[in-house]
Length: 367
Image (cartoon, rainbow, N blue to C red; front, top):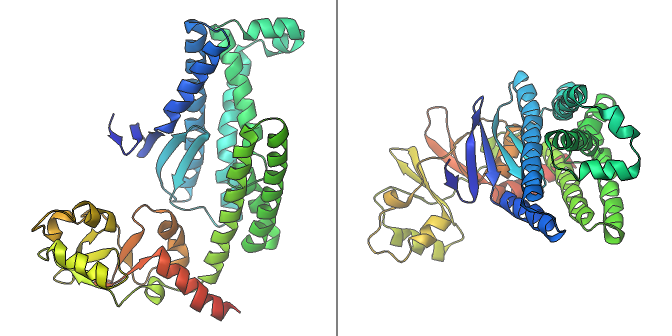
């Protein structure tokens, strides 16, 4: 299992990479520590670890539910990343049609509902629910397969309830937006869903300050998610009708693979550019990122061709800027060469100049 920059790659399911962020290990350490601190033994600590791992398996299935449903609408999913607070499916884009967004959004919680239903068939849930508090606590404190499955049943029910809270970036926020968009349009629906989400975040913040500090973290997560989604949709609306060539940088410095790194450094010092396109015969063959320039800056006689990245994404000059906005905002590459129909280099685009375009041109015209 390869490890890259704090990410453990577990494998692939239907072409979707399943990855675990390094911080997930902190969660396992924390639950074991808390169990042992409360006078638990090694057996009970192992029980908790197995429960957490099974719970996150359910989270992966939840995210696969989103991914497989999105695939029905020709939307691919690159990866699913497990974090201590849950999972994130990296969809190529969020469907804009309300009916499609609704189906993709509810698919995840429906998977958890199905898991809970299957567990219900094999567990005496009604018997558990009929126990008094003392006997129920005694049952829950006794490690065993049946207890493990009962906890898993409760966890899946909680996942359904939590994910359907009507606040971005959770499924409930997208469900709310999809339902509103059927009558009000995507922009207005997003604004309303964002306001509701931020109101819920404030409520969680207040509860967290008095009762549970973990709710403060959730409040921050919801507030930032709701605000970001609203901003992204507003920007998308302003970019309606524009193409990549309308916003791309054209007055930029390019290098060939034979140029020296010293020449690149001199260009950085003399101007404001930080990343560069490497071209040969008018074709883009690499990108020279600032971080790689800095990393190799002390080496003497280094050629651009040995430092540039050869695995990169290019954007078509005639591409729809609105559709490409999520990629430009979220992709780790951040700096994209722009090419013509014959793959010749014509410019570049990044989030900085796209923001300037939104502020100066698209913003002005939309008034």
